Length: 204
Ligand SMILES: [Zn+2]
Image (tube, rainbow, N blue to C red; front, side, top):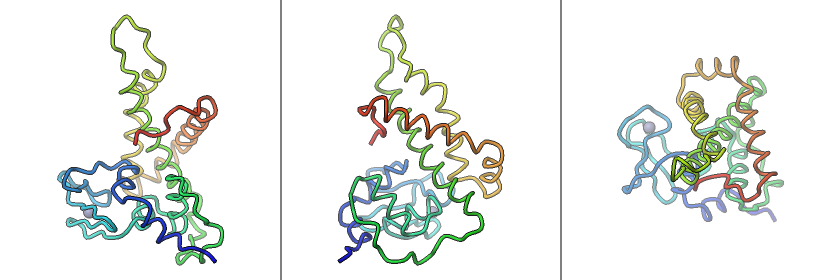
């Protein structure tokens, strides 16, 4: 018997946590600046089992969110959530994807999804480091991780903005000119995992 991974995800992951995990800030009223259209005042409301944007009408559940953010199929999105939240759900035997990923553009789309994910993770890590390694006194030796954060954060933020909110053209341009950058960041994150398992991967 195969359990329904989609239902399991909805049951086990708080949608607000998922939204936060993906780099969006939820305010006290449960509103977020919509990741699907450009806005300055939050009109994207996060409910328990779904979200709805009063600005652009985007609407969906946990898997829809991740699927749309990273251009994944619903199965891929479910797998990603499963992995990110360490749910340990069976993903091998689930039903066939409803929308199999198109063959063309595969490489670009795959790169885009992975890159956004990597860069958001790194961005959160840098923000975390900047907070915890903030030098208390100018005499102290400044921590390398603090420096890494200061050096990289502006560019990482720019990359995340471009890859999440940029036009198709801008994303492709990034892909053509700097596609190796997210891969280097991925390598850096992997190294950190190996060097220090205690290194916080994300500031949740
Ligand atoms: Zn919207």
